[in-house]
Image 1: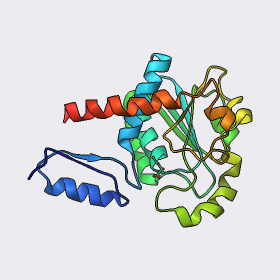
Image 2 (image 1 turned 90 degrees about the vertical axis):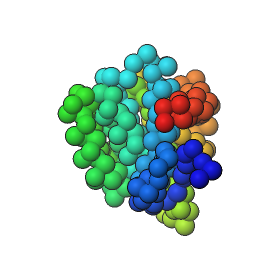
Image 3 (image 1 turned 90 degrees about the horizontal axis):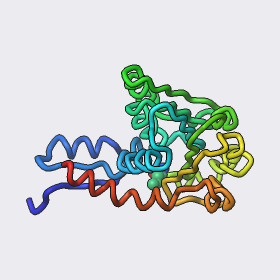
Length: 210
Ligand code: NVA
């Protein structure tokens, strides 16, 4: 009763929806195993700032089909983007989220696809995105995942398969030398610090909205 709203970061997505069902104040999803919408809003804002538009742009998310992949499909589908998830077999994004995004895509003209080859995914991309290979709560799987995800590392060679003016985004924290190399995250195509700053501006907008 002291609160005007709650931002919750947790594991099970159901915990957030259950809280929202019982609350009469805004409940903001600050990250679950399934989705990370507050991050994606900052990401889309950053892409809009850098490219001047969202519609028609190709974004390729490379790596684990996790909460970031799910939310990028969700967000991209609403804005008419071409979102490709390039992930190892068995690490695809949530099937329900793929269906939802494909459904939204029908209305917006977006295109959603899932591929298992990072080079095929990144080809012609305006935006290349990656995230850690083991998310919060998956620490015990880190070694096994690192072996499987290695071909999905975002390095200069993979970036070269995207458009020459492609930008690189990462929700951070990054595991340098794993999901991304220093030369990419510190290189001229990386916009990760503007993206991180935009988290603050976009969270203010979310608070203002609710
Ligand atoms: N997929 C990552 C995102 C961290 C911001 C995790 O859930 O740990």
